[in-house]
Amino acid sequence: MRIEPATADRFTDVATVLNPRGREEACWCLHWRLPPQGVGREEHLRELASGDPAPGLLAYLGPGDDGAEDDARGEEAGGEEVAGWLGLAPRSASRTLQRSRVLPAGDPESWPTTWAVMCVTVRPGYRRRSVARALLRGGVDYARSHGARAIEGFPVEPEPGRRVPVGAAFVGTVGLFEGAGFARVGPTSATSGRLQRWVMRLELEPR
Image (cartoon, rainbow, N blue to C red):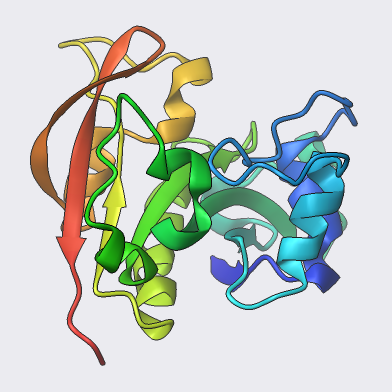
């Protein structure tokens, strides 16, 4: 598995994960960093991908990795396919999060150095193969390399014995974040798929 920044030259892969059907109303992982008035979401994300830091990370898998079913995915022999996306950014670039009534805004002075994980998406055919885990760990490294002092996420905790519905899983799970070293800070009044979201935080030491 290879984790790469979602730069402008990889935008086709970004679209493959975030908007595979070409829907005009696609979210494009921009709920917390909405485009200016009159600018479309795809256009805005493409612009973000042209800057540094990148607006997210992409995971790639080669043929046969971890039992991949190449024929079912239409993957070319010897090629590599994009498997997932992780959206993240400093709080200073996440205007909607700064104004949220259900998630903590944090200290404005810390916004430039506190990053937030916005969403994680794994394509069908690649799920339950540790793609999300690799993306989250890659996100921690990427945030640290750009001066982050802490990184936070707001995942849900599954009900005992039940899996998180696919429509709610884009925020991640508490177990996913705990596996990457994050600690629980506390519950929030936010929900995803009627499941409560938690504040998870990882303090980062500079390299």
